[in-house]
Length: 135
Image 1 (cartoon, rainbow, N blue to C red):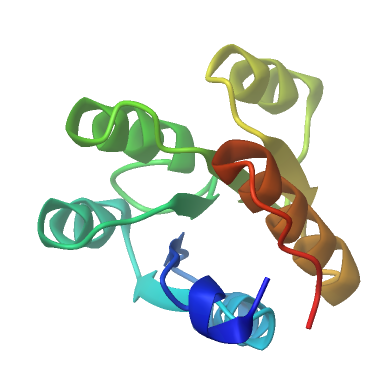
Image 2 (cartoon, rainbow, N blue to C red):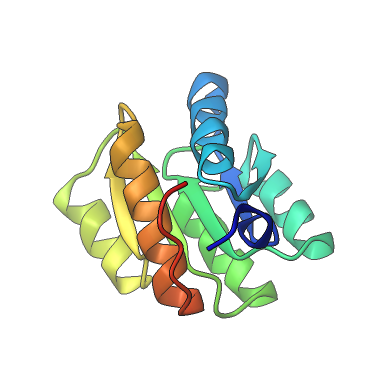
């Protein structure tokens, strides 16, 4: 898929950890997508109310709203939004909750750039039925 076409797709990144959020932004933009960043679940909800978002990457452990709580609320606004959960604590309970919430994938922290890029492109290709191979 051409870079210009990929830039029409917006990826929401919500993580309260600034270095992790910036790393995810770099990966998303490096794959040619438009990145929207939020430092909390509440900020993510504000963004999705006014901006079309094609996929959400959510940190599981944020103050106030967890990634899964944020996803539940995001889906009240945009019912079919696909999501990738990022967590430093990928326990069986979190993996089970993510599966029940129909999360595309759970990515462990620390972030592996190749794993994130691969998972992102795979999710976008699956949900938007368009080949979106790397740059």
